[in-house]
Length: 116
Image (cartoon, rainbow, N blue to C red; front, side):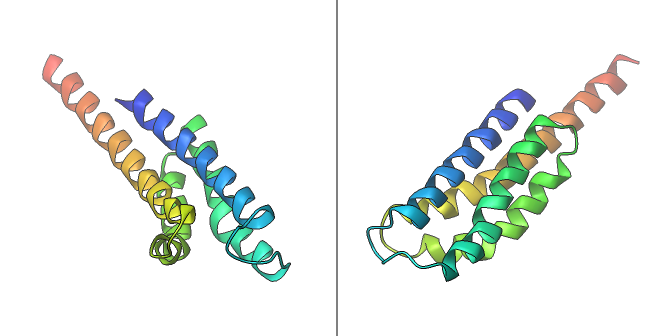
């Protein structure tokens, strides 16, 4: 279950980065401008990178940080029409992955205690 959670987190992070690239460089809904690039980079792309790093490292609390960090903007974008609503889904998958890892850790602890 832990492997699945890490895989989900990595795929969600990659999807967020690809969506961010689409949003910034090939947005069919708005003309390119430099203002939203910095804001969306810090609020959508960096948390995606943090989620990927968290999945590859052992500090899974960073995945929760990535969710909390990206959630406000992701929630806003989720309610807009178009493909960028997927930002909301990728953000929620950070939380889902964190919960899966937490549950799998608790299950392993309980199994270990049960063996003794």
